[in-house]
Image (cartoon, rainbow, N blue to C red; front, side, top):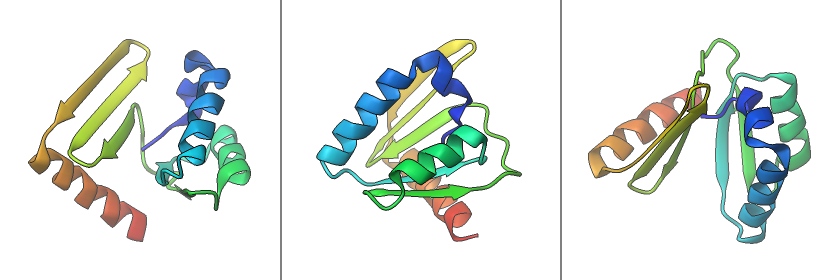
Length: 104
């Protein structure tokens, strides 16, 4: 779950470097975001290259969340805070929620 409003705080150079490393390593990303202008630019630039993007404008996202295997990482920049957890049950729960949102 990503909302590009944090990208300006994180820095576009960081986002670009991260995305290119992910693509070079052929790591797939399925991204759900609200569909801001920045989100649409990201989709236009990266869709199809190990990247799928879906917009859900009615979904209120106030933090970023990534699910990778049993790891769940969430963060926001205002205020600056982040968590990283390894939890098989929590990651399966979050993956199930993500999958339902992706289908609808």
